[in-house]
Length: 453
Image (cartoon, rainbow, N blue to C red; front, side, top):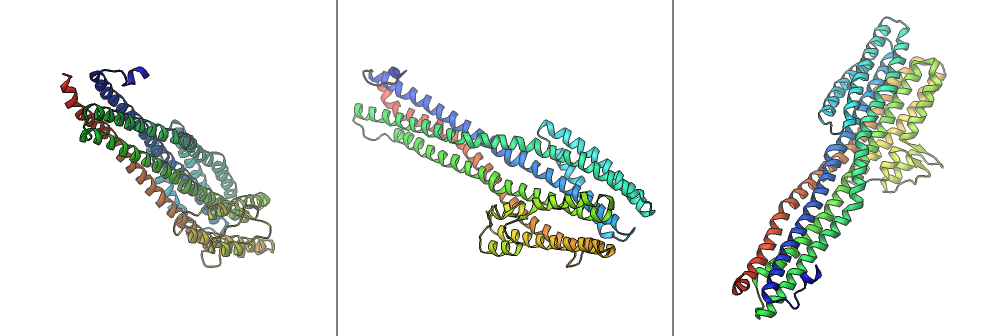
């Protein structure tokens, strides 16, 4: 092989053939490596940005819609029949949203495990909604059986619907993490192979030009020099875009998607805790269970220790300072430590502020209930006015959704940018590789004609 590539001791006709064929082989090799690397980037960006990540986010949207409906049912049942119309309306609005989310999930099935998850979701939700209808009918008739129906609906939610949503999430998350890990570990290999093959092509063509120059005493051969310049510049251009594509995939996954998922997880915990707060007022025999559930869920949203307070966290966040993990943990704390985009800090601070207000009101609700002021506790829990629980919770969600929207916007922009970049890379590779080979052919052709080649 090395003997074949050597130009020393070869006749001029054989040396010219070697230069030309070597150019063809190296141009083809460079093209193959560039196209292969581009396809790897394309597969990773499509899997992470188009197939898996949106489905993971959709799974959380479904889960959160279910939890919102559960919370609305609890709010409705702790009041007198017909007294909490806002919760009834909110339930219906979320039911429509949930149906839309399920239709979207069914249309976006990519992996086998998603089919079973969507089917299980649909079946369990039909069962959940039927049980809610029964609970409402009993409640309207002042029949104590409504409590048993509520418990049954919650059991369906906890043992069937939410696990199915988690299954839908896992089916996509596993693929997403696997593909992203593989691409992160191998992208530098693709870049090195690209630079090595492109550099080899440049050096080979440079060697061929130098050989012809010494044989013919012609210093300039425009086609040959064009071949060298094209190969060199395109190698650098492709290398730059390989590097930028890796950065954009990182931005899609770690800067945007991971923040989106963390926020959606936080909202799931908050919604679950909000339902537990209402159920605590509704179901006396299970009060201890629901109080424990609220504490567990709220701890996942935000846990403060070592003297840390919400007010102190707010003040620090406004100065672009973050609490360390020893004094603050949970979804809100994680988000404040992962601020990336313009406007994200302000909306995250708003989310923090209203979560603090919501938890403070929860304490007031429990104090009223323990003092025997049940109706006042229910009014504070289900009220929509400023200073009441639902008002604070909705403000918390507004801040969370504003933070989500910022991350989703950048997620979509980075996916589009990465996809457009891949299209640009794929379109130029074959054309430039052919041009490099043809330029060298035209550069050698006059000299080959002299020898009848």
